[in-house]
Amino acid sequence: MPRKGFIAGIIISAAVLGGCLALPEERITDGVAKVAAAFEDEPVETNESSDGTELYVPRSYTIEEPSDKQNIMITKGSDSYALFINPNEAADSTLFYDLQKANPEQQWVADETFEQSGRFGFTTVREIAEDRYELVVSAGGVKMTTISEERDIEKNMDWMMKTVRSIEN
View 1: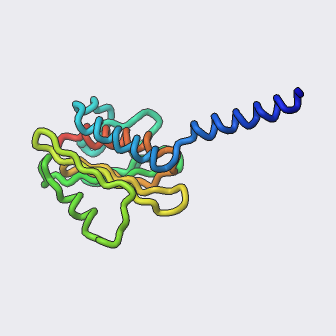
View 2 (view 1 turned 90 degrees about the horizontal axis):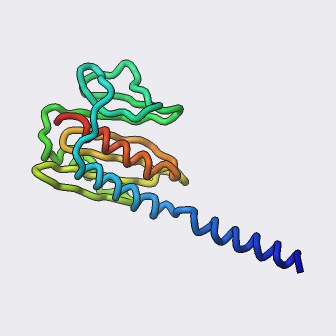
View 3 (view 1 turned 60 degrees about the vertical axis):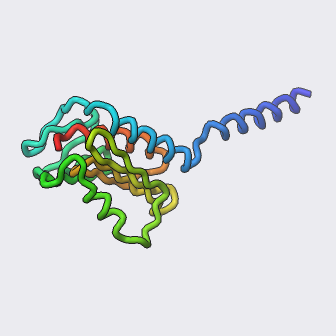
């Protein structure tokens, strides 16, 4: 009898743990929801500066040099995030989105746009390999992109939009 109880416990534990593991689609959906919330919220306070550009960068992330006013590389460990700033584009600019959508052959797992108070933003997600996704977030003339592991999609999308929104545009 104890053996049956032990086996039943393992089966129940496996089922519970299996239910806790998020599928890629769920991580992406949650990530898009966080991007939308960060886009709609007030910009977070800046805490870093790169070549005169004030921006928010989470702790333990580093701005790499050389960076300039239009191209900033942010890293954490082996992960890299490319931040592009086009000072000629207004907050309602769709330029980065139009460029993102220019290749009709690219398949996006997620493609969401946001508009609020004269501002335009978007996020796209594209699977590039098993467990690897290209994440892009943008608001007006500011865009950030990275290649993310599946488990980090939601976290990355959230802070990326907070960083993009922190830059005056």
